[in-house]
Image (cartoon, rainbow, N blue to C red; front, side, top):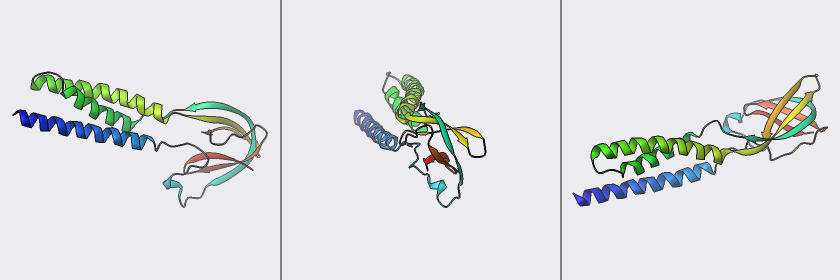
Length: 162
């Protein structure tokens, strides 16, 4: 019986390690929200280009709404850790459930923190007189007064100096 528990514990630890490594690998692939980034859904799609002038720019923080990978990984790791608590089956089950909930909450917060980036909110006056705010990543700063092409496509709006 002791041998089975030890093997079961080792399997859980190996799974936890694999999930932690996967989370780190995927979190390194966070979207940059920048001008030089395109998703696969934009391939082969036509975009509409508008011209205008940037009238103002301000720095913003871009935060993801939620982190599904962080939540799932945190829940699994929390559940595994929580199941190691307690002496009986009921205590282990309660620990696993509590650990999964707390791990999911913590994982979601950590995943959002990893995906948080700097960006700029630009006010653009288009040649047709319309005014819009466009937010994009900080990979390119555009000075107010700069003529721009505003590209509206599958990935949203992007501003490029003309």
